[in-house]
Image (cartoon, helix red, strand yellow):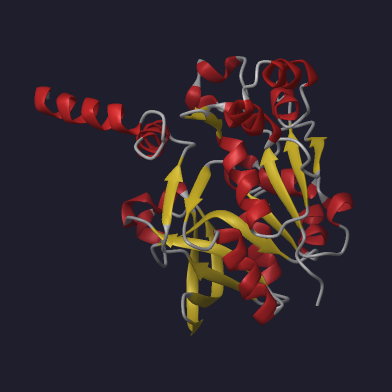
Length: 290
């Protein structure tokens, strides 16, 4: 069995839900307190044992590359002024095996993942979506890797959502619970209306996929939104080799949504050593005024 050592982060989206902020700034660089959202994703990958990461970008996404590159002038300035803690924060984003490729046309998530074919080769790999920031004692990416080491099969992360929200997600039709929090799946459906949804288990932004997915993506016809949908390709993969769903029960922040982004900033702010006490006081005072 081949080791899971590569991850792909699709980051080519236009970020239209955050306009006008994302007119000139990559959505993935929007901060949660003082850290860009994409850095949370990269840190989860590294904490899970991932060795190489490919970021699939698009136009106006150069700041992502700059963020993870060395900045000699900044580092030299901080060093000369003895600002060791700030220097350590800056150096955390360098020395990572990051690779970048552009998705030249916005043809959907499946098409973005297909850009990683040469990078991945014939190895199993992780897909990590930047809209989902995940908290758990064991990183969700590591949970998927642990399952793969037992099953040798592709596995998606799923989470229960309100039934009325099924049209926002890919939804699974579970056929059997084969282990704790692990399901075999009879069907993967992209954004079904609530009346058509077979369950409340929604696919969230972590996938462990075998390399056979690329052959399917190359032949995949456009689906919902006239885009090449990864969910549709996974449903096809499930017809020739088993694909499992792992139910995640930790904390998920949907930072692709305005409210989710605000919630993440508040909750991370309440844990941030520099501002947590003042923020807590402010929230209590604000609650008394509304």
